[in-house]
Image (cartoon, rainbow, N blue to C red; front, top):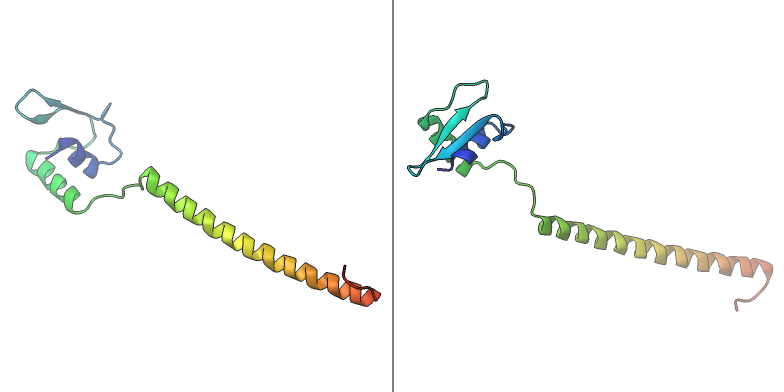
Length: 109
């Protein structure tokens, strides 16, 4: 069991710099200081939180590489859409130019 993770699972906003202090003197980790406005957890509670955290993990933000891959995929899709729009507008402009030249009685050069 990892005490830090068990405590952070139950109290995600707890700050280890001011709310609690863990210690290990060679016989395993323990809570040395507890400053939260709730009773200091028992060994049984800590173990239950740890087990729950392992079977029901909290949201983990995507790794930077995963995030970048998603952003690149979005950009590729956007670029493809813009290219399609540009091609469509180019064809529309060509059609308008033909109509104008036809109206003026001129030929396309």
